[in-house]
Each structure stands twice: as C-alpha cells, then as structure tokens.
Length: 135
Image (cartoon, rainbow, N blue to C red; front, side, top):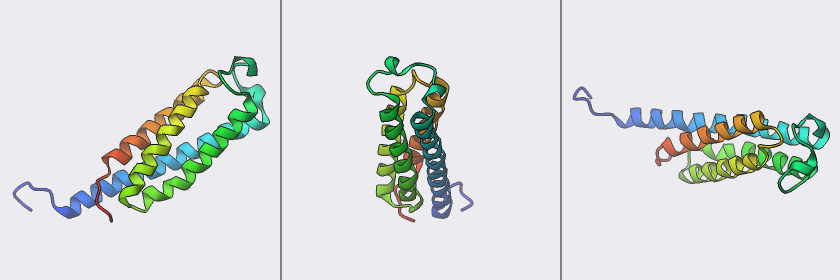
C-alpha cells in the first residue's frame, strides 16, 4: 500500500524470517551443546576445573545432560520451522532450559558455556519476535 501501512504479506515474510532465524540458531546451539556433552563424556581433561570443583555433578553426568539437551534442541527446532503457534513456546522453553544448564556448567568451560547461553538468548529473542500467525 502506498499510504505507509504494512501489508499482511510483509508481516508474514518478516515473521517467517524471525522463525527461520530462531530455528537456525536453535540448531547451532544444539550442535554446540551436543559437542560439549561429548567432550565432557570422552575428554573431561579438556575442561578448566577438576570434577571436584563442579557444583553438583561429575563430568560424566554433565556430559549426558549436555548431550541430551543438545539433542532435544536439535529435535525441537523442527517445531519452530513448522511455523505453528505452539512451536514458539516449545522453542522458548527448551532454549531457556539450555541456558540454565549451561549456566551451571560455566565454571568448567566458561567461554563455551557463554557462547551457548548467547545463542540461547538469540533463539529466545527470535522466537519471541516471531508473530503468532500460522503459516
């Protein structure tokens, strides 16, 4: 429209861009988290602190938590790409859980954990910016 109003097609394209952004960032975060879990399982000497300095679990337990969280992020990214309203909530929920898990792992590998937390925040932002319409 020439009077400055945004058309529905522009809103749909814009929101699908946010949807695709959030889904893609969720895949990247899931891959990073899966790698972190595998490193914790198979090469725990790679981390900055010893197992005695972890807050709650040992590296094997953290490795499994990270690995499972990464796989869940990868699988739940499909809900975001599906463009369904409920996919936003699934995405925001699992990205929030991922950020919390990585906050608990921050003492073991600070830079890696911060990268994953930033990716999770980007996913949450992208999912929250995605409009509620179904495509």
